[in-house]
Length: 166
Image (cartoon, rainbow, N blue to C red):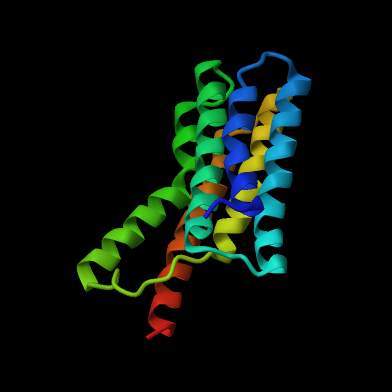
C-alpha cells in the first residue's frame, strides 16, 4: 500500500540521484532532505496508525540505498577510502549474518522485521560522516572502526531480541 510514509521513504531515491550534482549545497540539501524524510516516514506511520509491513521493509532499504549511492559517489570521487566504504556497511553485513543465523535456526517463519536501536544510531552516524565527507572533512581510517563496532552491537541486539521473543 502506497501511503505518505512510504512515499517519503521512496523520496530518498530521488535525493540520492540529486547527489550526482557537483554543488556542495545541493548535495548537503539532498542529505538533509533524506534525513528529514527518514525521520518523518516512521513518525507519520506511527502517528497515523498506518504502519505496514511494506513500509517496515521499504524504509531501511531506502536508507541503505541512499547511503550506498552517496558513499559510492564519494568513493569514486576519492573522498572515501575503500576500507571506509566497507566499514560504513558493517551494520548491513551484520544484518546479512543475522539473516543467515535465522536461516540456520529456522527462525524466518514468523519473524517480524522491526527497527533496532543500533541500526538507527548507525544511520545517524552514517549521515554525519556523509555530511562531513561532502564538505571535505577528513576522517582518519581508525574512525571508521566506529561502524564496525556498531555493526557488531547491531548483530548482538538482533540475536538478543530474537531469543527474547521466543
